Length: 134
Length: 134
Image 1 (spheres, each protein chain N blue to C red):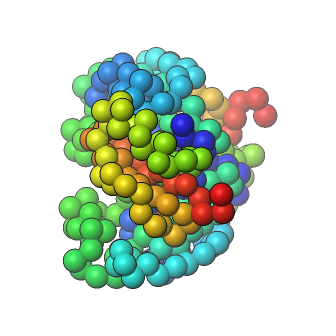
Image 2: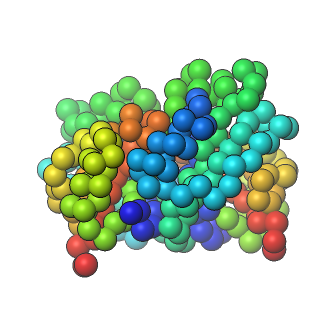
Image 3: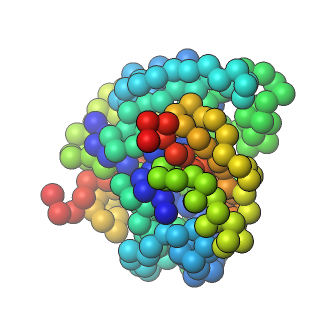
């Protein structure tokens, strides 16, 4: 079902300070920096070879990402897997009794996305992505 | 410097119960299950397309993994990047002032490994790996 790991999402306080750390000190390359007003976040995708790192910072104290930061601090938020058909993937997961956050796909930066509940995968939050170019 | 993301490490309480969840419900395939007595853990690698998931469970209440579970609960522990030359990678990171956990590489399951301190990457713990077959 999961075709490839598209990215690992990391929630951080200050996206531009973090980009400086990741690019200047750790050697990542910035691919794209995007504001996502409907989610009240700014995101940046960094080249990591076969997969990317998505840095995510809240732009509003009321966002889910701001609550994550307040509760857990900076760190890994989710792992995103690409699937060919997100409706089929969600149906298969539902058939297996997997608890979903998003029962129906919604529009993400790079295509249709849905989150699986972290309790369904022992604390790992999995995002599934059907890329828009398909 | 980082060539490819080799795996994402996830710490869990019960590796066999988790394998059942990941394989039967989430559709991952088990590649390898290994006891690592010197680290007091058992690990299992699951196929995730271009990268793998490493599930890790403590086999001793005094292990670092057991302390992680007690403090943080189940969830993502680290992201592992493959490098061509781990000594060169650690030297480059040190030159950039990056805080390391392992100043010198040590033997891991699939080659020489070293961990970067999570404070150096905003809460993301990065492992670097030079594969043994190189």
